[in-house]
Length: 309
Image 1 (tube, helix red, strand yellow):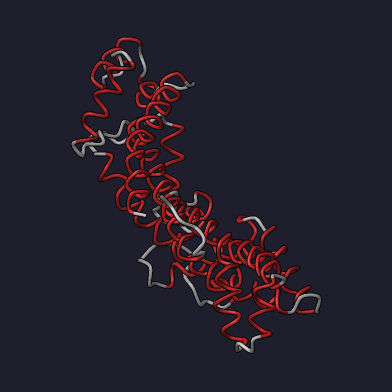
Image 2 (spheres, rainbow, N blue to C red):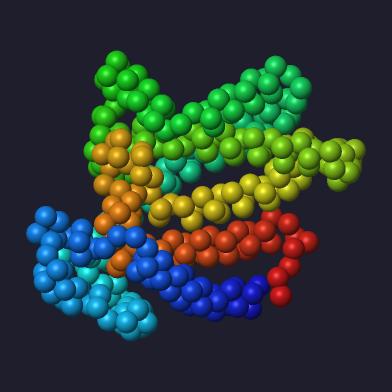
């Protein structure tokens, strides 16, 4: 297992180099000009040429890329083009932490409610409860954010005066309840449906019938045989959701006034803020690789037949 983990981690620098280089090429040769965006109405050819030299955008692409990688290895992710004088690390550090807390709360809601409801639907297959749970899951999964968010604001803030409508005060504040529900309810539906389908497949396996025939208590059958084997496909979804914690949610963060990474990422793309775009791409790539590795390791614990060499 340790050899497998080390081999996967050795590929991380290669992946980051590929991702950053592709981001550089697409950013530089795509439409738009950060110099023009930054100058705005003050744009003149002379001012643009001077600012382009100051920002280092007049150098060859490969030189810019090598210089960026050299500084990144030293912990310097560059300076934002959109916010002069602000380092990229200081700009995105707190925002990613905010988005990660919001994403974690939403994922917790999805897992804590989705798995039990999915198992309940699987054990009550064919009954009215199964139909009701599946129908409810489809309903919440199909509801877009710009419908559920105003509805929750109307009910819990305007009518009942229970929750604040916007702002951010951390993970354990009332401000996180509504945005976490908006992001978490589709997760409950998705994880619930996946759990139901996986559990139904496991319930029909021979080893479950054998365990019951041997007189094993039902709670042990459910925990050792049904839930453990049903968790294998669910672990994949949860792992990729963990990778998405740092990506933010643009619509939810905008509607609830949350200073997360979603709005910054979208603004950086439109304003051609290359250092911020590249840094975010690197962070997302690292998160995806580590989450994928975590899922592979978790597979070995869930299924003893899986071995990595």
